[in-house]
Image 1 (cartoon, rainbow, N blue to C red):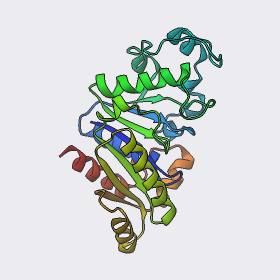
Image 2 (cartoon, helix red, strand yellow):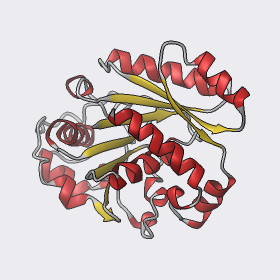
Image 3 (cartoon, one colour):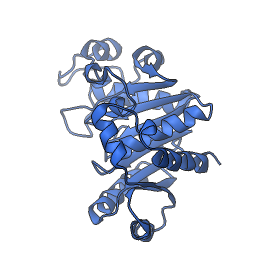
Image 4 (cartoon, rainbow, N blue to C red):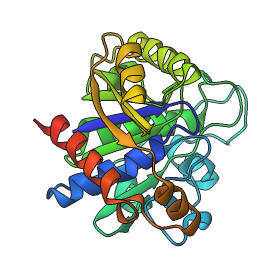
Length: 253
């Protein structure tokens, strides 16, 4: 199972990633979660105490230069387009309670489409995770899903778009769907978060269009408090953990 999770900032996609990771682990699966968001905070959502000390792969200058053969930030230089990355998931990831975390980071210069040593290493690493690893891979993506290349996207089982009741959330969802279509992703799903009542569910179902709704997660003040305390969401609220398990079961069926 290879899943990419996208959505507007603040809709709860990181919470969903952490909950799905826990659900798959509890179902006996090996899990690697990938934080590919420009503002990485998945470590905190999973309860990693040293979250603030994690250096994203995109900022590992010496590693990037070693693997690609080019100086980071240098223009007009030649570098390897297929650097060796097979050892990096085990070498660079952290493990807690049976879930491995790999923080990718993002390329901060040159534009989203730049061809530079950093972006080449990140894309090769994502490709390796999706095509060659046998764990469940769950990726917390930035809105544009630029980390996914055309050769990789067809192997993603689904791009899940997290939405909340609101027009702006669905405007972002439409853009993410367009990005996904452009790189060849075939399967999409919607998860509604911060649901307060049946009216919220109806709003999301009506605006999802042809994208199937995988499930709904209730609004939870306990999850907000857990985030402030660095406690995993799965331990904070059984109702939202149950909703995530149901989504996991639907994905696995």
